[in-house]
Image 1 (cartoon, rainbow, N blue to C red):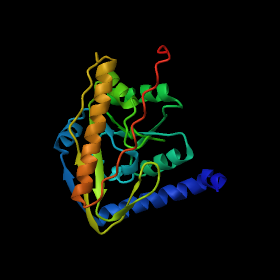
Image 2: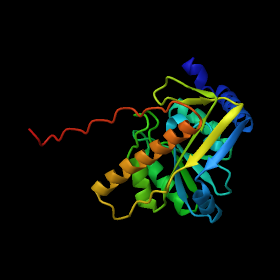
Image 3: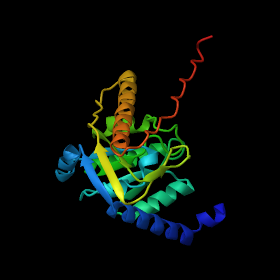
Length: 239
């Protein structure tokens, strides 16, 4: 089965089906957009920004993107990541390949270049392997390097099912109410030290979790809990 899923014709067919599903759900759901006036104005002015959302809320994000400026998604080189990127290309979203374990430095440079050229970059900061709903430091490093703000985004729906995957993926279904929420922009100072960067990481995590809880509340869903926070590594200098 794994070999079959790697084949080009199968990947193309699956991407087409997923894109069809996204369009079907989006058109047959009553959507409300909350808090996105600032990001709409920023996009209209052609000013770059970094969009972030949890991996489990990725599937309908292409329909949030209704702006003329170019958008690129950071995706994993893994088979599942490639399928996601193939699907999003059908909505005009470009791709940058990289993760914390592979091609990370190169991906960081490519994303910084996109932002410098006036585009936008999209990142799931808990992907591709978790822990769920915990921000990894890469997105904070990008915001510091580029000077672009981070915009937390989420969605929820009345009709859908939360899967028992590591990211508690929300499989949306049509014929109900849905909501997109954009949170407050987060800016990182270029001279931020390690302590300030960690504080910004924690704050972004808090904001993204808060709007996700609110979106679920508005859609009468039980909120998904973040995975337990990783324990800090022991300092080898301490006996």
